Length: 405
Image 1: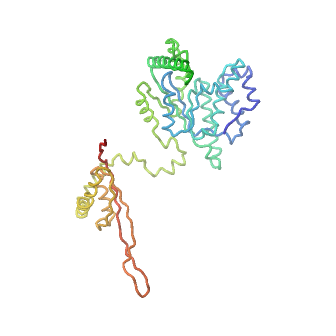
Image 2: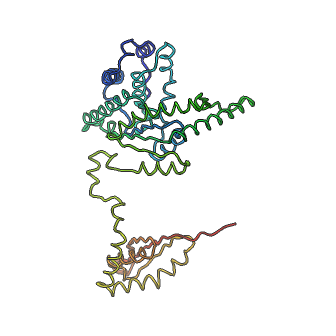
Image 3: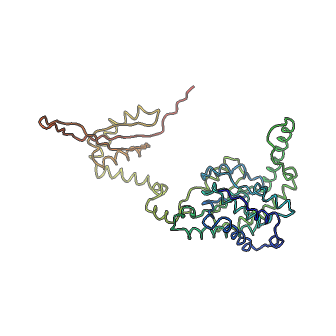
């Protein structure tokens, strides 16, 4: 859903009242913007993203470099909202052209309207917001409103549009020395690209920041981050999901840090009703904690309590199944059909699977019942069938890597 700025709103942006410029009270700012949104869109159209990742970081920490990877990890297909680009939008430029500064009220208004776009419904990365304490307080009030809307539409057909919001604070961090070094390196690379573009008259025109060419300006930019944005994001640490990413190392190491931080946690992201519905099904990490000990216990019980049947199952594996598996040592997967009656009990099938598991294979068994004609009554023409049980066994393991040249 694209939300064009109404003429009256454009005029208000282009020529803000002096009183608006002087307002520093976050609640007054937010409530004013919220009333505007309700008037423009209607309350039931105030549909904000299910997931918002607030991405912050020191200069040179790699926000631009890592945004695509973060989107991939979270399954986000939309482009991120980058505050520096948003503040170059026609609406923000109208403010600047009128001689006004883009203050907290204008920033919050731009962000909230952008978040209402349909493409961000499932989730979005918001790069560079919040940066001030007023913006932090406005963010908190937005999330409170999102929860209130969820409660309001909870048992209505619109509930799918007002899901439980998930808010992530993600901070990519490098120290001052690394930040300055990366900024200056970026400056050298930018200059080289610009020189090449000038020489050939073709090629990309990257943004050339003065701070990327002056060490004192680069240090100042880092310190502004620590004094303003860092403090603003830290104040949200105890409220929302907070991810501190060490971005000092090479990109592969940083990506591993991001993966570790963004591991899926269903109880934090799913609606509480959905969590309750799934509560009886254990997650995989729980059932594998003692899997090895339980396997050992079962195998010993087979030998000690069901020795005769266990011996038959092991003999079947050694004599009939394993020779077929060995012929598939390259591919690492063997499909075997067995009709041996020793497998006719659930306990024997469990033994078969556990034997292969203990030896490092992954085994699965499906039972197929096939109706086979047995005899025909010549007088009536009735065909009597017998049921043949076929056990389809699949054995998977690490196959052989063959070098091909």
